[in-house]
Every structure is written in structure tokens, then in C-alpha cells.
Length: 149
Image 1 (cartoon, helix red, strand yellow):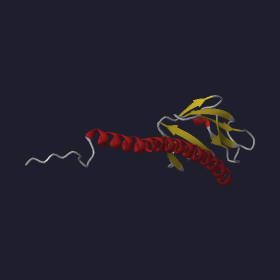
Image 2 (cartoon, helix red, strand yellow):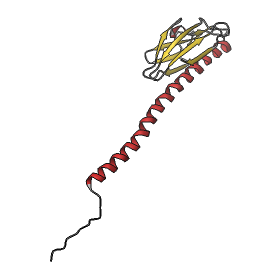
Image 3 (spheres, one colour):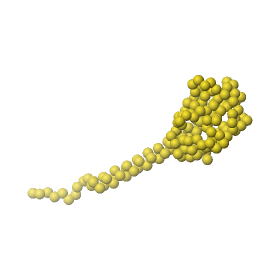
Image 4 (cartoon, helix red, strand yellow):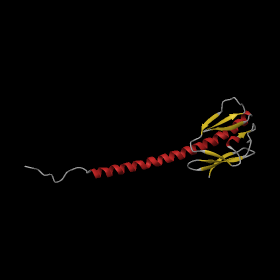
């Protein structure tokens, strides 16, 4: 006797492919948005760190009564004192895609006199992949701030 099975328990290949596609899409979307958020936060972290480093350079120049300046070389910036042969006080990597553009001063012209005042006041535009920023150094008290445009 031959037995015929009318109903099979299980899923077809098409059903399995559809379910796997839905799972793949629902897991890929958060991963892509997380990467974008991470990149945005890393740029914001760099901007905060740059502002803190410039304030540190200003405070150090006032406290030690020595010239402190910023030097940019390729994809790094250094905070140095007036000693030519001394190692840099701080060294930071500039993230990929970040560039500095002269408005009224160049990035290399940032420096603080031995009384804490800025050597030169001015503005620098900072272009990043996600947003543009403006770095402003004010004369007199030598205030430094970075604002998002």
C-alpha cells in the first residue's frame, strides 16, 4: 500500500528567505545608524579636546611665564613652548576629514604670550564630514571658543 501525505509540517524555502531577509534588514539598520552616531560623537570629542588644549596652553603660558604655541604637522597638532629642542607638551591626532581654513589667521599662528594673552586674535573655520565649526580667539583676555555653524 502506498501512503499519500496530504499535509507536510515545515516551511518552504521562500518563507525562510523572507524571514532571513527581514531579520537581516532589522539588524543592519541600527548598526548603520550607530556608526553615523559614533562618527559624529568622535568629531564632537575632538572639538571639545581642541578647545581644552588651547585653554591649557593659555593657562600654562601664564603660569610658567613662557610663550606657548600650536604647531600643526600633517594629521597631528602639537602644543609647544618656546624651547626649540624640547618635546611637545601635548600631541593630538587630527581625525580624518577634519581640515582647518584660514579666515583671519592660520592654525599655526595660535599662540599665547607669557602673560596668557593671545599673540594674535582671529578666526579659523574647521570643516568636518558632519558639520562646520568656527574657532575664535579673542584679543585681550585671550578667550578661546569653538562654535558650530
